[in-house]
Image (cartoon, rainbow, N blue to C red; front, side, top):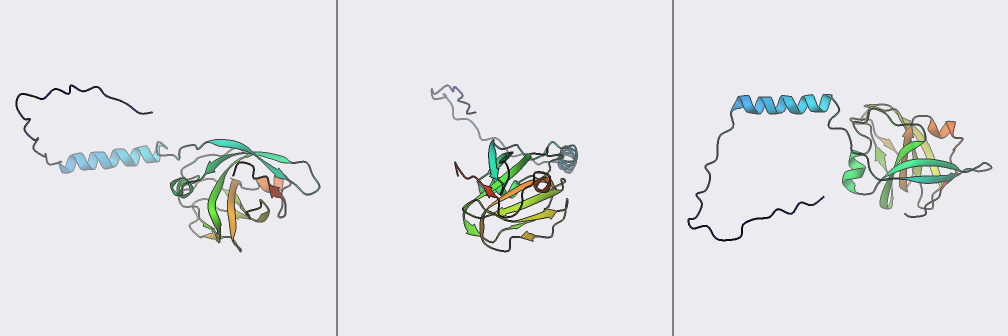
Length: 173
C-alpha cells in the first residue's frame, strides 16, 4: 500500500537548522540486538507467504493430482524459499520458477521442515525427486539442467503416487 502524505508547501520564513546527529549508546545497540534475536526466535521473522495457485500434476496411468503451491519467481523469493517456516500442510508446496534451464542446487539453511524436492524440465516433466533434511546445509543438486523445482512436505510425492516421468502442467508459466 502506498501512503501519500500532505505537506504544507509554502516556504518557511527562516531556514530550518540541520539536526545534530546523536550518538547511539552501547546499551541501546545491545537492546536493539536482543530484541531482534527475540523476534527471530519467536518466529516473527518467518518467511512471508507468496501468492499461491493450484498446480496439476498428470500421473502416468492415474488421475491428475492437485497441489496448492506458492510461486517463487524473483531471486529474493527463491532465495528465501521456505526458510523459517514451522509447518507446511500436505498437498502444499513452493514452485521455484527460473528464466532458463540450469543445474540447480538447493540446501536447507534456516529451513525447519523436512522437504522433498522435484527437479522439473522446461516441458514440465519431473526428472528426479530427492529428500532434504531440516537445517542441512549440504547442497542437493539436480543431475541435469531443469527449469523448475517443486518443494513439498517430505514424502508427499510418494503419498500422492507421483514419480519421475509424471508431468506438471505449466499453464501460466
